[in-house]
Length: 425
Ligand code: KE4
Image 1 (cartoon, rainbow, N blue to C red):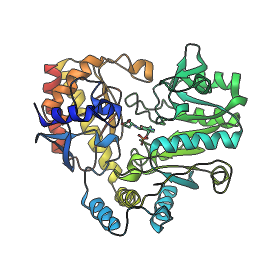
Image 2: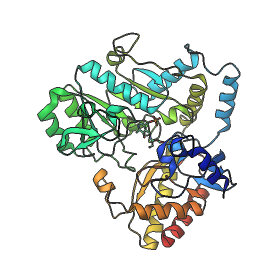
Image 3: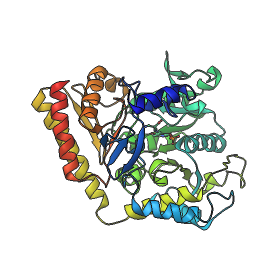
Image 4: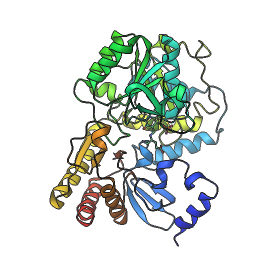
């Protein structure tokens, strides 16, 4: 029995599924998760001494790779002066200014400790600002685990949402309507029917949680136009895309400005940080200035803020996003070549350094088409890659991430493994 197996048994006695977040349990691909001993750069080592090229990157935060010296040094130095005060610090102002500099639509923002908190708070601001209760999300979109966002399309499509989790009251789920991603006609029809009730549309401007699905040309612009026409707010959930697909996220890359933006992952450099923000007149409704309440013991935590500042500083270096684009393109080309050589039907969706290989002919433009992917085939590929020392997301419906710590040689190694893995699985 491996040390990971022993640990999983011990963990499972005291933690649900032995993991602190469900996707880590490998239920999407079968088998048992390995337990991590350490990581550095683009590599992870498990407790049994095996090493893996890491393309999960802690689900997005590690755009600089694991344990960059500058982050380790900054966090260590700050920790010597204290780990949390529950009082304002200069660094929080610096991070808020850096984020607002990258996202001009975020004139004012609040730091929180997760993307979930960011999204749930943005929804509350939207409901508070508009006095409306209904929100709209998209099938396959994930915005953290707040009750209002754990909702999927009801049997009547957009007539009402139904809970996507036990414990979410039907009465609350009914206030969340779900549409097909990239389906602008459906959005227009819904607003024509129920516009005056709708507080906001929340969208991943590049979907990452159904696997990577880019916005069709005009989709984001259309959301901007429809929400504005009906007095609803447009919330971009940039927890993944923020500082990932451009320094200014999707708003920079696609030139569409959101009313409220949610951030997380990269802005914490691997420590717990989220943020939500937007126009001043919206954010001035947040306590202690206004009636929308939101709070957090560890919001703006000094260690997390220090890691975030180092990360954003590194991402302002010239050429960073060209390099991420080149590395992402190399990864994509390797997978496409492997699929062609082995005759396996694979559709690769990529935006910058986030990508997903769907095991289906494609194209994959929404959750319905994503679900045509062959999950069993993906699971066999995942394990064949793991056996060759390449760690991908343990789910077909997640993104792979390339970091600045990945070198061309790593991507070529992954491509060779993919060719063997596809042929073998
Ligand atoms: P957190 O609460 O996990 O920090 O953020 C929630 C969230 C919000 N919005 C988007 C677009 C997200 O992708 C996420 C979290 N992403 C998942 C996986 N894609 C985190 C991994 C996990 O749940 O373990």
